[in-house]
Amino acid sequence: MSSNAVRGAESAKGSRVCLVVLNEFTNDSRVLKEALSLKGAGYHVQVLALHAHGLPLQEVISGIPVQRIKLWTRGWSKWKPVQILKYVEFMLKALFQCRSFDVLHCNDLDTLPVGVLSKWMHLGRQRVVYDAHEFEIDCDGPASRGHIRAKARLEGTFIHHADAVITVSASIAKAYRRIYRIKTPALVLNCPPYREMVGSCNRFREELGIRADQKIFLYQGGLSPGRGIEKILQAFSEMPGDDVVAVFMGYGPLEQMIKFAAANTKNIYCRAAVSPLYLLDYTASADFGLVFIEKNCKSYAWCLPNKFFEYLMAGPAILCSNLVEPRVIMRQFEVGLCVTGDTLEDLKAGITQIMLMNNLIVAEEGAMARRIYCWDAQEKSLLDVYANLRIQIIEK
Image (cartoon, rainbow, N blue to C red; front, side, top):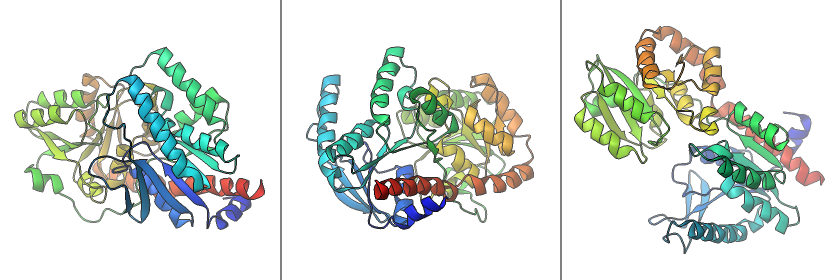
């Protein structure tokens, strides 16, 4: 950290930061980690989120105050004009809630207009950090060029008014620099906090009745299209024996499909999502971790997903589709295998090949890699961004 950045960090106390999300903030590990890091550095932090039935309007999560916005239009139709009306209601209420903060940390493109409009309303006295969790203009699977251009115009309108931009992979950062002609965004990767995995974990074998001689391939995370889930189900349903099994752990629109497959296939299992507090104990119970994301949009093609770093931290060898960013890390550290594509045949070949890897080498390489790819290292990048922001506030 530069001397100016250190001076900015030292003057952080008293600065008020609002992390704005367009979700209920019930399972957003990235935003929670950022909030805790900022609080630890001396900032006064609050999360502003959406309210949903059954959730309190105000609560404290891991020491972080959370304020939720209740939308009167929330239960209305999903017709596009009504969705726009819902967003307008959210924006107006969020602008009111944001009025007393020094820094607005806008997570994803949906919240960036809130931060920039609030900054304008307060005559530039507020600072805006734009945290792009994905390549925002092409992140929803196959999309038309018109749709992508429209989102790019929206993002381009507001991104130049952000005081700092953060994102989650080098490929996405380069794309933002090229498209919008901005300074390369800071990288804050989606890594878990560093943790030494002590002792053996056998959660899946104990809870699901998986035998000691069966090798466990784990898919954890969102159960959504585009993540290779259908191919994983097909590959394991076609296995001639039951010496290898697939365990799915998470939630999402494909959950019922997975439960049906688990009920009708001897080597497919489904486990409900667990609290982030216990997640790595389950992750460490697998022999191999699956990241088989399909490159059906640029955000997927350039991603570095949470699950990749969770596998890295917990220890199972990683079997990954041919993704740019994981491949860079896996060339640096021998922690698994990147196959040449994302087809069913690629997956089947990868399952065979990764079982031949030397487990001792994977363990040794993983021990080195997790020292680098952990939240403890990413936190420094986040705090550097904020330290420099604070200098702008002081000196302007």
